[in-house]
Length: 279
Image: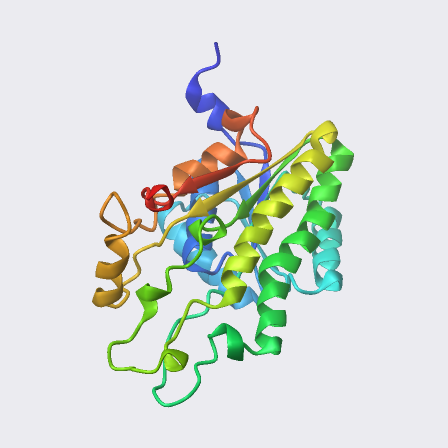
């Protein structure tokens, strides 16, 4: 019988993480490095990628990390990155579609809040969809397509608990605002993108099932990042475990989903939300 640690071992495999400069992106890179993978650390600019590399190197000095600037909204940029890596002899075995825009919910009293559905700006819709959903499709086309031609690979889409449930807009209400149309809300784009990623996961899992490519998603719950205490208190009341996630609590799940430990799992969405979606 194979020992459990061996099934998690990613030594000899290369992973690519998009949006690696973000809060969870950096954690995904660290998790994959810890499992032995070489990681292509990508973001829209090299500065963001280099910052993640520096942070990961502090805890794992021997980590094999490659920086890449990829605009996931651009088919040409994604294709060029694929060609560049291939020209350097780097084949991507694991793709983590993490790039996203997570709009911050704020409000200015006295005006129709632009996060509300009735006033939501079309350019913002297009920009956020382009990064969070179209970007995952383009990266899957290029890097997942190459995996399918080689007959082996893993794609992990980073969804959200709000890809499973609707936002509870009461979380974002401001007590000093009396008019509903001025209250901030979680924008429509976030839910649409995260639901879409789960749909993309199921589509690709069946599309490439006979070509050795497994595709799964993970839906994290809210991660504590020094948010407003009143917001944190309201949110934790909705979570059976009574707290938000720590920033490193998804690392082991990422290792599981990207390794042979999950070799008979595809087309699934692993929900890790402290139980919020159960209530």
